[in-house]
Length: 292
Image 1 (cartoon, helix red, strand yellow):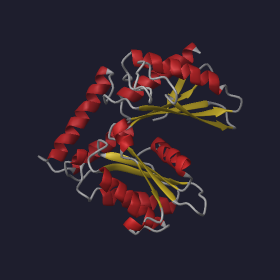
Image 2 (cartoon, one colour; image 1 turned 120 degrees about the vertical axis):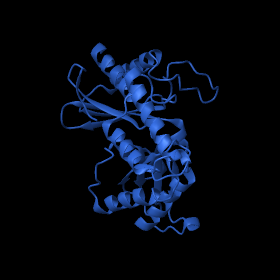
Image 3 (spheres, one colour; image 1 turned 60 degrees about the vertical axis):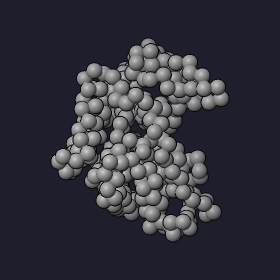
Image 4 (tube, one colour; image 1 turned 180 degrees about the horizontal axis):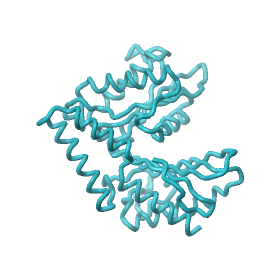
């Protein structure tokens, strides 16, 4: 398990310190969009310098290294218990190395043991598949952006939102308006239509595993994603709420089955520090390739 632990430590380091290429390119495009001499342009320039400094010094992009979310695709008969134990050891070591902030506290006592390991931390989502090979994806999701997530139950009388895609559009845009500059914008939305309260929120976060420049294979959802991105960036909220043309960097929407009595729309928000990375592992636990 030593090779696997070293691979996971490197995954944690790189996720914390290096922005994925698709996110960096989105920030560059946003910077080109903002008017020169504005607070929005200045804010994005600071973000750009922050990203470069973190990469060069191999230090966390943000002081809040966030919730540690592992998404692991594994073959049948894979030992998930052993993997989780090794991943927890990797988290302890990455924390000791300073790549993760001592960021996880006991909910009842507020005690912080300095390891980032405890009930629910890190969080694992294992998915078995028929094909061989192991893919490990990691999201580090900060608390500020987590705080501005929203869940709606349609119909929503306040917003005159019915149980249709137009109603979904209304509540998703309302989530953007309610967030304003909180959550460290410009942000990315991960949205789930349907499910129950728990599965809907969980599925909304899996949308962050997509590339920012991909297109939704479901035509109706693709049109909704593009419409919300375009509309949100016309609201004038801008980076950190200072005004400007870049409120969102992306919108990713998925849909899962629901009960006839329920129609949930869950909106997860990711800050500009979009820390997402992944690897394919070899049979001995070494890194074969990077996924982003």
